[in-house]
Length: 31
Image (cartoon, rainbow, N blue to C red; front, side, top):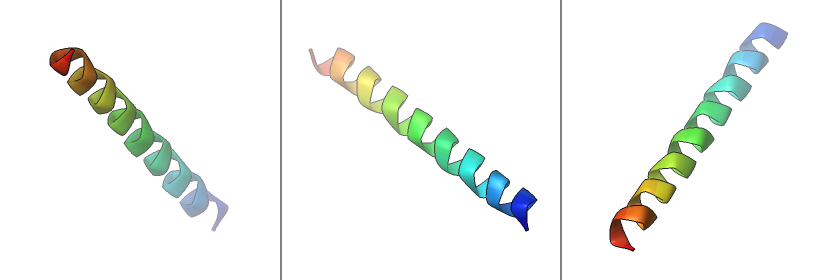
């Protein structure tokens, strides 16, 4: 159960990082 929770947490962290990078790249492109 805890392994599943850890996997979910890592997945969320990965998505947050991707969104953060995507946001920064788009702001760089538009500025």
